[in-house]
Every structure is written in C-alpha cells, then in structure tokens.
Length: 360
Image (cartoon, rainbow, N blue to C red):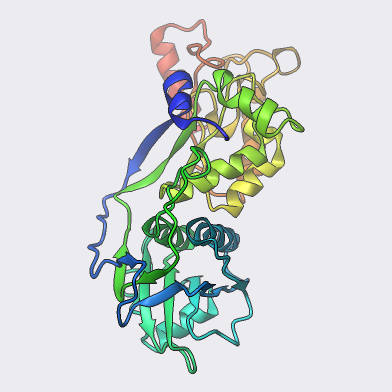
C-alpha cells in the first residue's frame, strides 16, 4: 500500500490540476476507435494470446521517454494478464506480431512505415503532442500484423502508449492508489486507426502544493527515507502519472520544508527523461525558489529597488542552469514566499519598478 490518493487530495491539497496557456489548436477527430477484447475476432491484433505476449520494439535512438514508456507498458500488460512481453531494440528481426513504438523522425521503423505508406502521418506530423495508434497488416516482410504507436513528438509517443494501457484496463492511478486491473487471459485489439491530438490546452500539469502535511512526510519517511526529502525517486513516479494523465508539466513542491527543485540536479534530469516540462509557482521567478534558496545574510535583502544586481545574479545563473531543458518561466516580483513586493516606494513607484523588472 503506497498511499490513499483520496485522503491525500482531501487532507493535504496534494496537487492541483492547472491548465494554462490555452492553445488555439483543436483536438483532431478520432476515427475507427480501437476496441479491446479478450475474445478473438478475425482481423484483430493478438497483444496477448495463449499465454504469449507480442514483443515490444522501439528504436534506442529515440527519446529517452520512449524507453521509459515501453518498460511501463511491459509492466501494464503483466498487471492485466500475468504475461511479461519481451522488449527489443534490435529492429532487424521482427516477430510475426510486434508492437512497434516510436516518434516520427526518430524511429527507423516508424519512418519506414511512413515511406511505404503503411501508416498515414498527415494528421500527426508537425503537430504538438499528437499520436496515432494503428493495427497494420503486413507492415514488413514476414510480419503478419503489427500494433503501431507513433507520436508527432516524444510526448505524443508516450501518450499513445499509455492510451493503450488505459484501453486494456490499467488506471493512471494504478500505483498511487493501488488500483488492481481486472485480469484477462487474452488481449485482442480491433483493426483500425485512431488519431488523437493536438491538445486544446498546451501546458497541463500538477502543482505539489502545501506538501508539509502529506507529500513531504510520506516521501521523506516512507518512500525515500535515504534522501529524506521529495527528490528524483518521488518525482519519477509523479512524472509517470503525468504522462498517464496526458499531462506535461510539473510545478514542484516549493515550501521551505522541502529542498528546492534545483537543489537536486537529478530532479530536472529525470524530468527530461520523462519528457516533462518544469514550471514554477508564485515565489519562484525564473525557476528560482526565494522561499528556500535566497539567503538574506549572504545575498542581502530580496528587494529589487535596493538589491537589483544581487537578484539578477541568481536569476541569470538559474536560467543558464535550466537552459538545456523544457521549462515554463514564471515572471514575478513579489516578496519572499507569500509576502508582497518589498519596497518603500509609493504605488506609482512600484508600478515603474515592476515594469523595469519585467523588461530585465
């Protein structure tokens, strides 16, 4: 038993789902939606049949998240059927009924299927976080049928894989809330193609809020006592949940009880391996946590009017540190944590100061 997600939600404000930065693009229509059955019908793809699971293939030159979700999908099939599929990155010798996972332009098999017109990528290519799932007959020589999951980008591919996980009965909350899927001896997938995306909300995610009461005690004492904090081991499970919920952004825990997100370099490395965008909340301009990272004794007052040089120094360092990764930057000029802007200026002066800070 990990933790009751309902208790977490009700008693500790574990997370808030925050849709921001709405995209003008609309979700593409889905056609020929795939169906899952445990009884064989002619033409269906045998994901698991007679105690044997189809082998999962992905290109090891693809994004790191593809390997992550391939492994997670392997476990999902096991959760439902008790059968563990093989995973292979050798793309030369495919089985008769493979599961092929990959991103357009990053997977040799997916690109070959596109060139041979075995899959239509016109509604996927160039889109944001869009994926296709197709049952393809005779995609390659000696291959009878394949389940092909392809994404426009690395998150699109991940969402496609976890869409199949949901279809076979695995809840996004299976780990967090001990949701045991219904057992099935066989899994068959109906023929057809489904295209999903792009999302109407571009950035969607979880904010770890008020972690003092639930998340931090649990992570530091139960799940990761060796670190004694909310760190990369805990965030990895949150990142996987995000992908399963078709979200893409984390606003990390930021109270002083927790180590700041950038305190542990692995936090953002693991986030990137799951293709998760890092954001920040109210006291974290440009991903710098002034509630725990700003030291008044050594850095001076958090006052842009009197200590602009000192503040810009730490903010510049943080932007450089996070530049290689996908980030959403909050621009603000408030006091430390929940305090208002620190300044002895009148309101008109504060307006000018804020304008100057935003320009900087």
